[in-house]
Amino acid sequence: MTQESLNEQNLAPPEKGPIAGPPRNRHRLIVAILLGVSVLLITGDAEAQRGRSRTMMPIDRNGVPTWEVDPEMPDELFTFVRLRYNSFYRGAAWATDFPDAELNLSYRLQQLTSMRAHPEGKIIDIDDPALFDHPFIYCIEPGDMALSPTEAGTLRRYLLSGGFMMVDDFWGEDEWANFHNAFKEIFPDRELQELPLEHPIFHCVYDLTEKPQVPSINNAMAGRSSGITYERSDAREPHYKACFDDKGRIMMIVCHNTDLGDGWEREGEDPWYFREFSEKKSYPLGINILFYQFTH
Image (cartoon, rainbow, N blue to C red; front, top):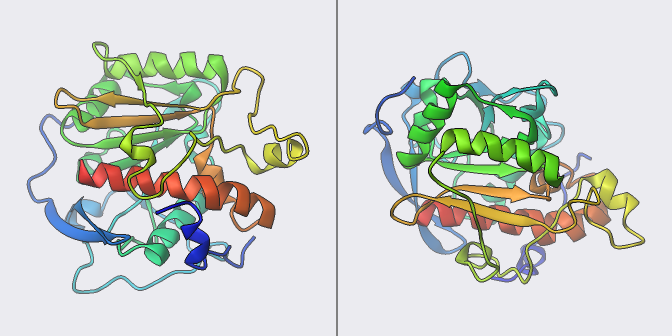
């Protein structure tokens, strides 16, 4: 399916502007259909979804539509999980684009695909046992991430046990160096590898012809007349790097010099930004990443 298929499906902006073992064996394996293709989704039970840091979204959805959860299958859903981590200097960098990014992405999954998504998301701390109940976690603005040895070890066990981490929205060489230091604390014996454009993650649902670079909406507006989509001079080229386990499974995808989350968050604020970045780049790649994760 091509990028233009989003428009063919009447996509339009909404009205608003310490764990020692593998994931719990109580996970249930269910089959979902994503745009006509079968995918496997691992979900946890309701008991595991209670706790201080398993925070649900605020009631104010800022205009994003909601939907009912099937009472007969309340747990057979994709739940967007945002990782809460400590920063050296910038405070709650983990909360950037919260909550509209996850609300909009979950809504689009529910609208455009046969995958059932929870209308709310969760915030989970690294040291929360519930981390191991979810196959997908989202980590945003990690250029100032600070990890303790215990936290690094927990993330290592989570990823090696089958978890998947998407890292997004950090720019330039300094932020890369800081994130890479954190990555090496998690995996001192592994390295990130650049994914070529030919990799299936860029083509498995939507057939992308480039590695997309998505700027924040303000930077996009500032660069509209010149066509500039990078946010700083040392961040001209978008990079998509992956960390693989010993069997070749992607455990972590790192989206550097791009901000897919802003394309989700800001989709309803400007029609041009929606068309050029949300519709053509952020949603297609976001759906591709989720589909690839669930099928590999």
